[in-house]
View: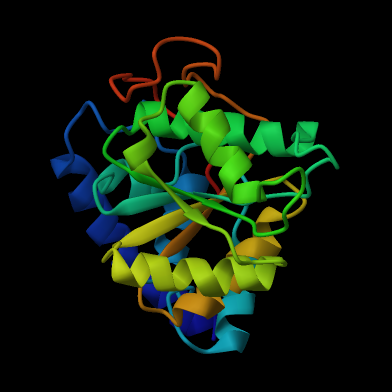
Length: 235
């Protein structure tokens, strides 16, 4: 498996090098690090885009978290979806700081890549609304157009987040997705989402708690005209 992974990485490096050279400069990061390049290869031709659970786990374990934008979002912001994972609400329906941190990461990416659709997930209701609904309200309240945000309101676990969102990604013909969650949760979420899509599209991870040059959550109109570099990718 190690030899096969190295061969795929060499092949993928050539593909990504050409793609980066041809990508619009407004979408390209200032300097993609070797770690981000390798993560991007792993997410696509390097082994993570498969239906074999053991290979998905092995490949996901090889990735390193980094505060850079995932390669697939940089190279294809139109077909890629930003998926922000929910977390339990307070009894009154308000959001806990951990969930707000995930939303801040998601909105920074959304402003930096205005053509990328957004999906909020989480079906546990508190205070008369689900996590996904509360998250959408927060995003809209911070300037993201409501028609840009889809909600997944049925899930009660990360595995269900992945399962129900995978159907939405397929229905919307997404070419890939980046999953936004807390640093200690991202890799497990990536594993679940990669298993849920069965290798049909590449999946990357995005960690909350970083902004790395992207507009802060409370700044600007958030309508999708920003040109910030984005943040937090693991791929």
